[in-house]
Image (cartoon, rainbow, N blue to C red; front, side):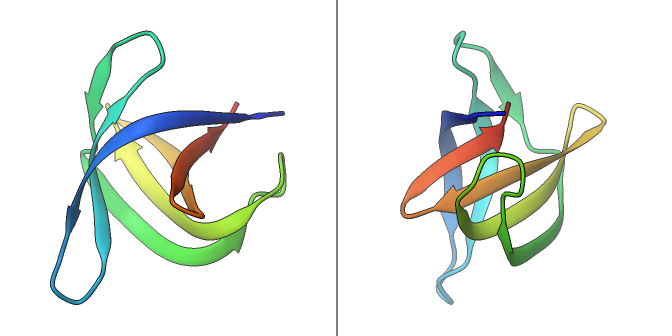
Length: 76
């Protein structure tokens, strides 16, 4: 597995929380985040790195989206 870094459009609230709104895929496709199910500190066991792990529903599929040192990535 490797990290695939993505461009994310996110909302920042006054309390410092970050909420991803859209994922801009490497091929130019843009996908809306339908729902954020969970946010927690976690380690990517498949490709390394740690930070905030967002469990998101995107187009009906559940996936992990990681925010680590100012960068967004998924496990690919």
